[in-house]
Image 1 (cartoon, rainbow, N blue to C red):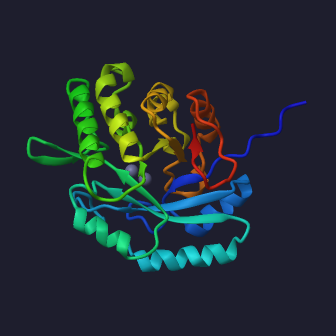
Image 2: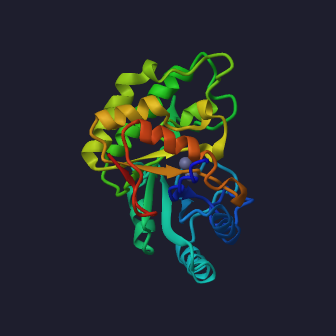
Length: 272
Ligand SMILES: [Zn+2]
Ligand SMILES: [Zn+2]
């Protein structure tokens, strides 16, 4: 007889129509999907981005978002819904980040680096054509150094989101990605995150191929354990209901293999 399916952890990194880049987002649809999946809990972590390099970008309407969460809590009483936010580059915009956090009670606060400065220009690692085989390694190092700067800065956040975000946009066909090539930089970041008391997020990028989308993978989650990291969070980073908790089975296996234990309570982090 097959073992009963393991309960999935909370999806702690989810975007809805309240994020500027989630055209297919739906908070209500995501709640329905969570109930269908038997997911115990979700955290809606909408974008609060302050770098203005994207078309269509707008500020997060915290009061409107919180009202929508309350409507969903009333409509889906069986689902635990956490509020949250994904702060982009909060160390570059400490006042703006503090203002967002002061605008309402946001339970799960993610710190994210998407952008770095290259030759005086701000670039998002997701920009098409940026990560060419010639420059990918240098940009990956710069990205990890920017993450280190965020961890050493004042602004409040608890969860370090998608630690190796550039992996998603890496030119894998021409240049294999090996974590070991960046071990020193990764370990610096992980030690600093552990000292800060951060939670490391394992981001599944909505369940795409793990060599691109599992951010970070097993090698790095093991280094997190070795660095004394206390806890791991899971996030699909979905921007639409259909991809909620995508890739979570594999992510749960990876996190357990690295030495962390499933949380007894659905909204809790997995601890060492
Ligand atoms: Zn992000
Ligand atoms: Zn996100």
